[in-house]
Image (cartoon, rainbow, N blue to C red; front, side, top):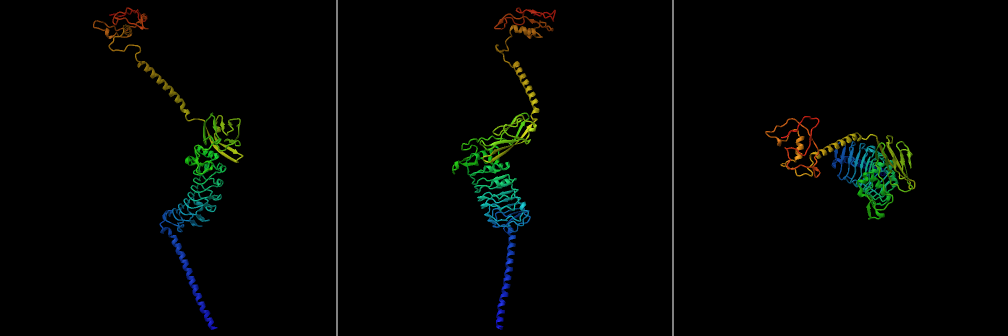
Length: 505
């Protein structure tokens, strides 16, 4: 028995030693883990991350996981151009101030639920996941980011976007999904995002568009909806929608007009441009453009068009005036007249007609509707009216000046007509010399001589009509030149100059 007891005691000794060894191993494991954590906290410095105030840039360093020593006050974290393959849960835990995270150009193929949990959450505004290998956008990916405003997912391998993937993103303003492999998109889900102004779905695999959902989107989202470079099937309704957006000047269409193509009859390889001319015949494809703002002078008529892509005999129209008045064809029997094609005419614009006019087009068969808003401004005092009287007076004055110049040109610049050339050496005709001498206040210089006394009195005489004519003009006899007598002219005194005599040489 004693031997057995000693054997049992000897057997117990190794058991206590094994326990001590096990405890030592556990302590070593803990120290190793602590060392690993310490090494992880220093990894960002060791691999060469750059820190500038509240920015940490670890771009292009070959990292395969998110560093664990990211400063708690970091606002911008750049992990682009690395080798990250997945985002594990709580990858950004303990970073309550993050506003921008850049993860572009990695190898991300999955995002685990809760990857952004316990991070800044409501403060995160910008998330860049572009140029990765994501295949789907799931509902749990961005559930913890209610304050996200800009989400970049272009240049991935996406084939599916779940309808609930964007439910928790109430503040989302810009969503980039271009250059993926999407064949459809839940357009109805984006109606719950009132702040969304840009949705880029270009360069995907969309074949047909749900026009009823697209036309029901808010107007500002339609302006920022990019659908170019998709293999769309040529369809008249789709063409009318793009044509209407082009006429309205939406940048999503006008900036990429050449990239809006469609497959002729759905045949791949047989593509044509949607704009400016549709490659297939369509009935009723003409769309009357209507500006969103119209200015009209008081008392003038104005015609407002209800631009819509809906066609067919079942489509009906109505307008709502700024005074909340319902207007349907033929009008309200007053100042508003409505036509069957949806156009509204303001017969004589008044100041109270200014405001927002809303048109609604309804298609009960297709269960579709479209709305348009036109702002009308009635101008009661035109800025150019003050200058009309001035312009009229200036035009009149200018006409008078031009007339005066023409008269002066006629009087002083008219050349000799039907007369021999005016030679300076030629003596004037007798009759003309006599008449000019008589009417002149001083005698001609040729008649003055040393023995001639020049009269200082001024006389005026009147000549009787000359009876001899030559070719319809006054004729002068040869040899009768001044000075000399005037045998062919009868002189008579003027009653105003009695006792005056004609001075003869």
